[in-house]
Image 1 (tube, rainbow, N blue to C red):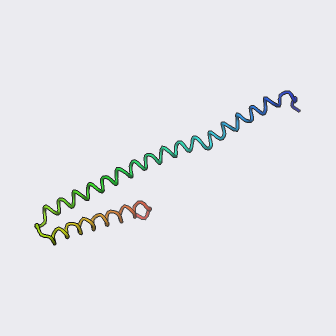
Image 2: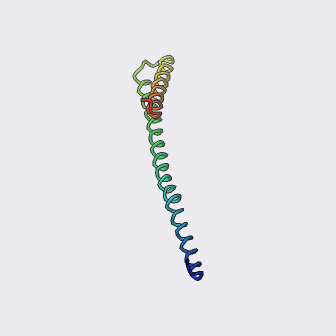
Image 3: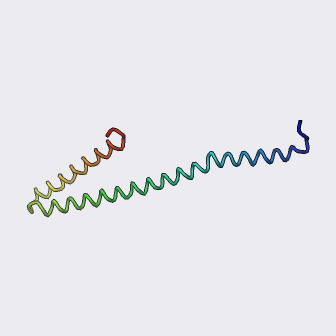
Length: 99
């Protein structure tokens, strides 16, 4: 049996052990998760920026390459939209693990 005079020391050790456990099991994993989320958001922003710039480049190229009439301008926009839609479908299918 323990001495009653050791009880405050044991309570202090229990509290310190509980703090260390909570830090190990909650705070440290949250920090790692926050880092992963930050990297994922940065990657998503860069991919989105690339898609926007790529679509603008494709539309500009098609506008210059096709004849200069109103209907061909509409066709350039339609082709650009179709390419972007197909790209989104492919990325969505691969991203969902069905690819």
